[in-house]
Image 1 (spheres, protein in one colour):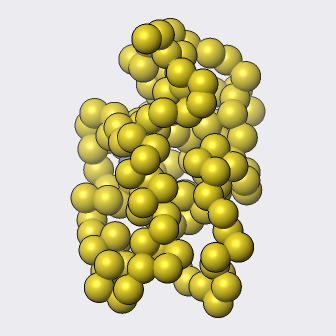
Image 2: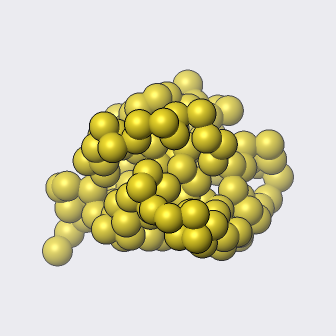
Length: 139
Ligand SMILES: [Zn+2]
Ligand SMILES: [Zn+2]
């Protein structure tokens, strides 16, 4: 099963994919470290596609290159997660109990804040119509 990797810009709402394609995750992460044209100060993630999107990676947040661009907790390797888990997490943020939402805010899940998931809604096929009454909630 071959995959390609693309960079997702979450400074747009909804998120957009940057045009370049990479055949290895390391190359995509290196491109983010080096700076992506037009997205120097953006919140960037890596998408692994076997069409459709199957995994999302949060690039390393340590190192001087992207100081100030982190939207999550410090990690020196990419944090990968299957999109199925992101959909479950989004459902928890949208309609989970208070206890479930407290678990979803756990710091190890810091890469996958509600704000990021919401911006990834098109890529993840998340239905925002279930969201009544929560739009102002902080991530
Ligand atoms: Zn951007
Ligand atoms: Zn992260």
